[in-house]
Amino acid sequence: FDLLQVPYTGAPPLALATCQNKPLAKELLRSHHLPTANSFTVRTMADFPKRHRLKYPVIVKPACEDGSGGIENASIVSNMKDLRARVEFTLDDFKMSALVEEYIEGRELNVAVLGNGNRRRALPISEIVFDDMQDDLYNIVSYQAKWDPHHPAYHTTIPNCPADLPQPLMLKAQQYALEAAEIMGTRDYARVDMRLNSKGELYILEVNPNPNLSEGTGIARSAQASRISFSNLL
Image (cartoon, rainbow, N blue to C red; front, side):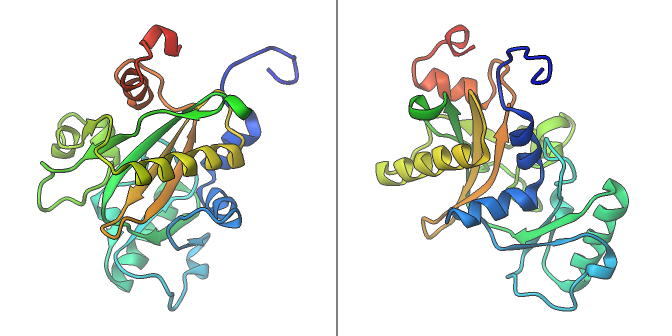
């Protein structure tokens, strides 16, 4: 579209490529002093470190997947032996680098961002509530939680919008989302996913350019909470 000068909505190619490269995205966030979990990247098993400084538990993610691909309960590990096995599985199964980052236990927040430049704004925050999650499952939005209706996690990741947050914390999360969207070069609409730990600290998980815009999804819920109808959102 860019080469043919065809107008289109949503993120340009550089933003799409940058956001999908999770290690690069995290480095960009860090370089602008935005909070994200400590991490390292393994490209081949020859790169696997003999020791590291991350605090367990850690979560292993395919470095350039989307839609929670490769993220499941087994992705979270608590010792070096299991970490090595999960990294090896990720490299073999997904044919890409593995991102290893500290697992942030806490609440999961989705911050929708609309517009560009001075007109960019953050909508009311949506939260994924894990109150009904089984005890043997981590509180994460796994691949199964998103896409497998036969998995128990699919029915126990419940959205709530607007999230019940103190106003200063809500404003901080929205400001982080606006800054992250600007840094990543998203356009028109985006969603920034965060974790809020028990100390009240926010960590950006990732920036999603062109997230699902279907009726009933995260951005649509946030728009509804802001009294924007679905048709007007589109």
